[in-house]
Amino acid sequence: MPLWQGNPLELLHTRLNRCPTSSSSKCIYYIISISDSGLTITMTEISPTPHKSIDYTGAKLGMWLFLFTEIILFGGMFLGYSEYRQVNTSDFHDAAKEMSLFFGALNTIILLTSSLTMALSISAIKQGAKVRSMLLQATTIILGAAFLGNKFIEWREHILHGFYPDSPELLTMSHGKILYFGLYYVMTGIHGLHVLIGMGVICFMFVLTQLNKVSSTDYIKLENTGLFWHLVDIIWIYLFPLFYLIK
Amino acid sequence: MEQKQALHIVGTKTFVVVWAILIFLTALTIEVAELQLAKLSMIANLLIASAKAILVLWFFMHLKYESTFFKLLLLIPIGTITIIIGLTFSDIWYR
Image (tube, rainbow over all chains, first blue to last red; front, top):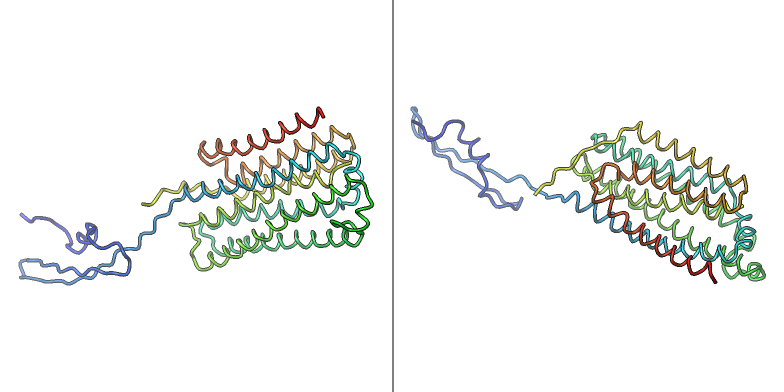
């Protein structure tokens, strides 16, 4: 009665757990088998499959915790805005007339669409559709660039009209108006910086996707990038009515 | 140690429908502002903005499909900011 049955090589592979875990080393095993035809010695080389451990939930939780700090960051600025607006209501009303509703609405639509393409790119990579995911990531980056381009146009117009921090024209105006523009530049400025950083990270993800470092089995980096991008969108969702829709 | 990734893939249709609702809410918020109802417009617009934010959080940021732990955790910064702004205003209003 045989001690075991089946292919000894298969048995060795499945039972292998004495091999060192480092992927660079290999194990050489000698299998000695005795059968009716005689003694056979087989030499086989086995290298353990590299085993990268991914803490999916931990990585996602880490990103959410970071987003919480971003909420507090922008929350503080929104607090400043709401206090100054409460105290300088009519001045804020007048100053908001300088804003271009067209560009504000256009930027809102651009960012909402970029959130769509970002979410779709993650669904795509989960399905293993690498090219579609990369195309959607690229679209997100282009929409982000369009947003920043619009911001450039807006800021340029404001600066040409003399509405910038510490400008001679602005300093002649009422205190409330100065506060409005101060808040406008700081809040849309820091938001724009976040858009720029987000674009950079998505570029990085684009490269990683191409190199298959982001794939249908390991996509947490792209998901976390998406979380950041969506938060940037949410912040703009609040910035838009507060700066552009004061009537 | 490998953790099982809950592979829930949200369909394209869901995302596009959410996007369409977001665009509609944007148009709505502009209309509400045009009505020029002063304080009422502001409150309405903040509510619409919050509705948009909740949609982005729930669907685009996948919160609907996350564990309850994540959902509850989000209440901490939201609660914090609400308390900070709320308490500050309880002071400002009576100055």
